[in-house]
Image (tube, rainbow, N blue to C red; front, top):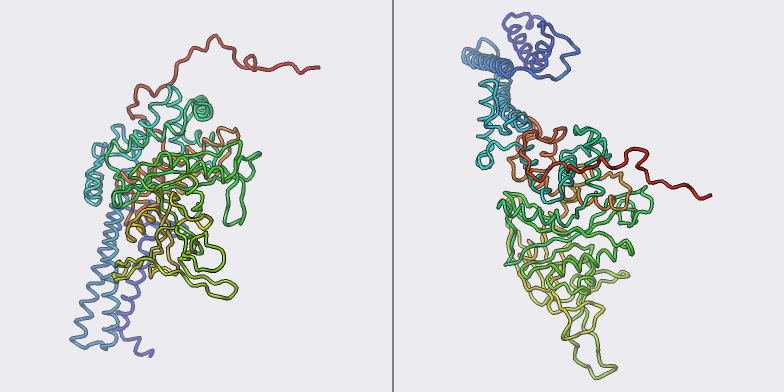
Length: 599
């Protein structure tokens, strides 16, 4: 073996192979260390740190290594033909060389993706004085090429909103939203909403004044923003109405329709306040297994489409009644509000958190409700008298799904009709979905009545899921349509996600009774605005690794984080400081309304 290693040709091949593999393994770290040191020598402490390396240096090193491996491959092929070296060694070297050539080609392509992604990240986050990317002051030809590459990658969607900065887009949306508020209040609310959508509340862990300080507001501006939020003359219903008009006027958001019906999703949300004294309400938390102190709100949203995303458009936020803060009372008020405002072509969609009895009590005419798997109902007709015993007064029990009780199986009631259709799963396979219907039913606690509100129950059996989907509705719609309508309610779950997790409203530190209710409301609205503006803009990558970005609120919030309000945003005439005369008023300690304590 020693004599074989001493042969100069074999030794040369081994040395060349090891040197190339070593240089390919930590090439980027060596280049990074050389570039950062500024002197050309290797520093161990620096070689372990990832720093920015010039693009031309990275690509040059990659092309040089690729060329070397190509040369090794050619020589290995020649040696196989000549036969001066053992074929096993030449074949082994050829396999390694071709593998390295393929990897280097892949990394060169990745560098192109990184360059475009970094251009997206840098250019979209930058706010120039003119406010656009296409007109931004570019310092070099390389910067121009990056912008052109960005527009090519983003395609048609980038062309439709060409050059629009995320900061300017969000600033304009907030300005239009608060314009109709009283003068002075609209300016403060604009600052407050910007602190929410820019993630400053997330960075301050729910503290409002530190969020404004991080945002760049001084003491006077912070106090004005707090006064506008806590004591300003505004209602959340006004802002919701203005937001709906604003979205519909832009014409980008398209509302969903299923067999002529529009979806109106309904749900409850709780903002947990575990240490708030005299918290007005409680909400059930699954992790704790009990109801905990929380500010509970009822949500009503419309559902539409923007590109490939479903975007909610909130219409109502319902507070708890302070005289009766129970969740049951809130649910009744929420359902009454939905029943009063439900249009003829709208369909309320609710999850299993609501009961069928509650919907029937408020006379909700058009709804789609998910039922528990052990739900039952009754026929709305009295069965024929059998000639023995007391004449029947109740309809027959209808049990859509079989169940087990005390070790005995209770069979399901045969369906009145069935429906079938085919779908494709992610692997392209054809799957058969079945829907079973039970028609003309009343509540299990109600006797048959000609004037009673009847409904149908449908059980949708999808082979991808173990348990069927059980729904109740008074409408005669196809099974496939009912399934799509219920799936379309999921955007209402995005509002709490955007408000709590994306902008940081999961932690709240306000204690005044009105502020306790206002902060969750305005946070939900800010989450809706963030989702809408994100869907309207081109997808913004988080970094070079984000090769297939989606237009999500989290990505937009990362761009807005730490950014002040755009200074070049043209404000509307109504959004300004209210110049009130205060020279005649007392200031400081003399303005305190204190009275002597009675002796």
